[in-house]
Length: 384
Image (cartoon, rainbow, N blue to C red):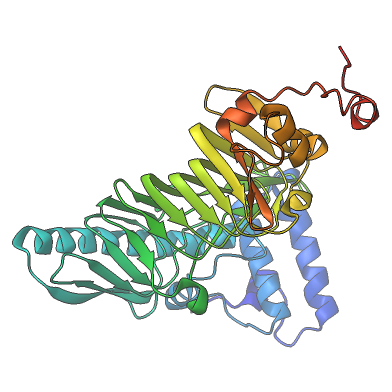
């Protein structure tokens, strides 16, 4: 006979909310690890209490666990681990089979269509087309897939949040990776997934990492840790075109074209083009030798966070705060003084501006003669 949540808490069916709460508190004091209790029993008691609060009489069955396994957040770290364990194991096996299936079709230059996953976990459709492109329809949620050719995708990409074992990792050894109408369909990459195109470009929509608060591994009550799940997108010999990059994301490419960047984002590229007005919160631009940074938005210099950093390939670091206080026009006059307006190294692009690697490498934070009596003293720069 299946033990009900009432039995777990040692109360009768139909108990009041207060009786349920009192029973939980009594057992929590008895079984919590801080008082020498068993952690597994405490988790069981807490889950029974949470279930009864929403009117659920019995604990989840194995089938219910599978059906709910796509849920990535919960009140407890134990719930997240349980659901992601089921998700990760089953989908990773399916993706390994999908990888072998696609590779066999490539070797024989054949076409075929097949479903992978399951009805409870979510199915995705893979199709190898006559031109060698692999089409993916559906949400890619766990596991690795390496393919020797281009991929087009209709769906979002995510990754299990608690472990690297079943991390989503899509790897193209050649060709481009593209979302189909990513902005219109609101497709996204998130939660610590990885997409790599060794010799192609990547065209996607929004990209999100994830920071989650997890319970203290030692079981201390009221103590939590911040766990990061950084999302990585890499096209070292091509372009990455994306919309918004938010909350713990890293991009590496020859050229990166994005809209906005917010909260702990790293972009490493030779050419970086910003079409929005935000670059905020602990973000880093790693500019490669001979490269440039181009801002297209009107007055987008005002949207740059003072704590963002530009790192040059030679190791030099420049705070965006210094670039902002230096002012774009002043930088142009200092680096190319013979130019009356914006010169070749800091140029107007529409209502935006361009900053080159050479300009930043040769940037001196000493004021020009025109500036000594004004902003230099205000911001505390030396007049020597």
